[in-house]
Image (cartoon, helix red, strand yellow):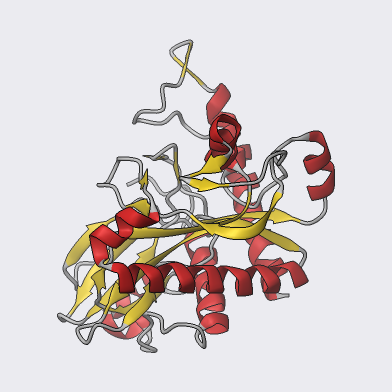
Length: 306
């Protein structure tokens, strides 16, 4: 396996625990039958394709950011952290693969609804608004512009797709069909509450959370628990407050703390003289794009925890 540097982990290879699944970024291992070790790799996916080159340190930054938010939001909703030290469940030789980039979490029954909350009009939401003056079936006022703040945050759930497919936007009514009215309503209300509180905290640090997605699971007793990752640049659109007003006035996308450098580069990348068709394998990322992306993730965490 090609590792560009010892600090980058493209794919973990723990042999002391059974591998449950590899996602786009996380490798999940079973710890007994009631816990999971989630290892955040340095993999990056863009347009649902995993890049061949890792972003050094990204998994550590994502994990530290998720832990920051789990700590801040614990009073709203229980989360999946066990409080146990991830290093305690692997062999001494495997500790470098998990250190700083892992969470030891409760094994839950996942709810197959991506709880998406949007506080601003951006990305696919902006595209859709231009066509229908609504986002995922939620009607919005006329006259909004790209990156505009919405009058109130809106809940626009998605159905979790199989690996490699795009998550599919669905209506709230569809989530009621999937999980029942009580649970669907609780997920919606909790998601909006968590988003509002997190957005207020981020704003004091000079950052706007434009939109985000949460994932929930159920304990064996039926308790609703916030799980997976929370409010990282992989699951949320973060904008620095500087530059936001200018972008809004120009109708442009504000600068963001995420993989935008990678996306922008891929949009103009050529493979065999033709534009890349957004299917695997991805073109090789230049070092400059890798370095800039790593710096963005680092800056987001530094600002948040300063």
